[in-house]
Length: 143
Image (tube, rainbow, N blue to C red):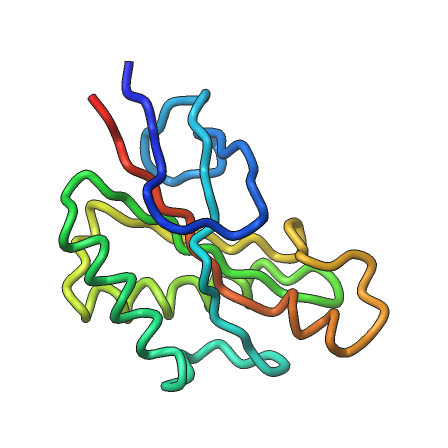
């Protein structure tokens, strides 16, 4: 059986990630951790802000440097469901990371819509801004 273990500094949020949530094969009993950095968005924007370039370069370097690491890029929205926009955000970042040299076989992307908010309920504009993001789940497989 393959077992996943995370080796990056983790965000406070921890959750079980099941095979249905991940676009390539993964054991059902694995634990996923959110990478400590995420990208924030204004309104319905989906392009990568160059202010986040250092985050993406560091993440790409991490994944490229350790061939046992795999990455899931997850797009999120606020203020109601929008799978299309959340998937667009995740795909844009996925393509950016591919351009930086991250192998496509070791990463995938998924639009989460508003199913995994950091803040709920959203009472202020700041709450909404925290939920408009792309975050990353990094897995290390031990055989």
